[in-house]
Length: 252
Image (cartoon, rainbow, N blue to C red; front, side, top):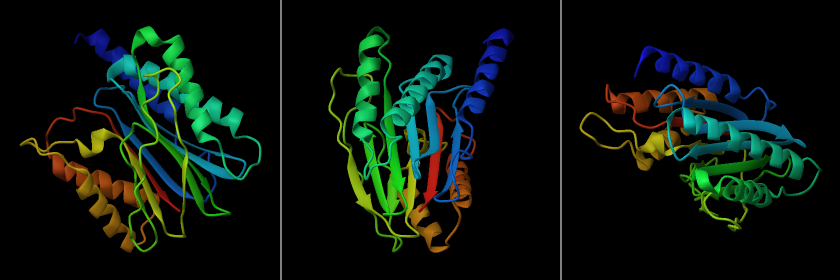
């Protein structure tokens, strides 16, 4: 790669990181920490966190490529999902229509950009603290980790395909209850697929065990995120990062 191309890729990465921002768009509850590191200077992973109607929305997603092209489509997907959420979920209600949010973005991308063959896996969650309920849609994405305050795992099932693949795809919203001290960890496949120097993947089980152990220590969302990243680095050692890495830790 020549110097000019490298500079352009670096600039794209800086713009992307600025675009992603941090968790400052949400209040003090829940405790949220976010991280994304692209394999190249810019990537297709993204996260989002914001409050609407006293509810907190968390998104972790992954566009099907890396580099500048994926970063451009990441910005499109992210903006569309945020806009759809603000459009469909701004009014007070007992539950938020996350399935409608994701279906509307899917229909637009699969119709208007069908020739581009770009798609994204998405995990979107709406956290309602007053009633201690988490609503979610898992669109072809890696299963997040959810532990109640006792450290018991509750599985989050896939509720639809990746967005942008199929016109009129069907999505289902699921709900679960949580108690104070529950933990939610969303991540991209770059975390569990990260390899050590001999090619062994980090894996879902190692991540689950680490989260469960740190829950016993009652760490903050930021400390939990840092412990995951540290353990991931210990696993990879000096092996090359070949995929974007994104993590969202949430203490409920």
